[in-house]
Length: 272
Picture (cartoon, rainbow, N blue to C red):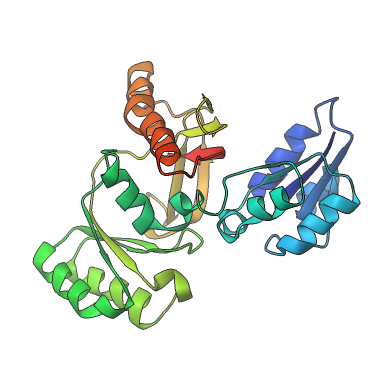
């Protein structure tokens, strides 16, 4: 089997390094890859956002399966593009990828399907004054988020109202995240430890990967602004069998069912 892995991060390195251990794999390619992936596979000079270039490469090299690491190609429609060419690829369609690509869509989806989430408000580009007034009324602590993809840096956990206004200005006035900040989501701050559960799914059936914890703040002791991730580990010891059952019942299964109901079944890795 000849496999293409799209992306250039540590995630893609880990995928290729693991795939290289399989006797069923006869060729491994990373687009664009990194020095680590080059040690176990072949790096390809095609950007992860060049959907046509990736599809052309997969056709020309008779790639049997493509795996997509980053969110951006999924949100841009790489799965739709590959499926148009009859190419096998793991991931959600562009419509389904809105779960990851739009925080407003995700929150509204969860509200429609009674999936537990923080209380929230969504404000569009013309709603800056309303969002600012809402921050004054809501008080702190509070969370301010750019709606779209921002490399893990568009979420601000604010301990004061002043910090919240600064975050709002950075997103909506300074346009620090470009089009990702066309809308802003303001959420209540929830206390407790964060855990991530990933489910590999065909849209209805699913298999869980080990629960993990991702640490995003840039500073020691969980301080400073968020990043795309300073480090992660699995399995997460705070998740026991009872909690995992609850996560599946209240989050994973309603999410998959809701996406099917809305005509956009989610295939690939669901990040809960």
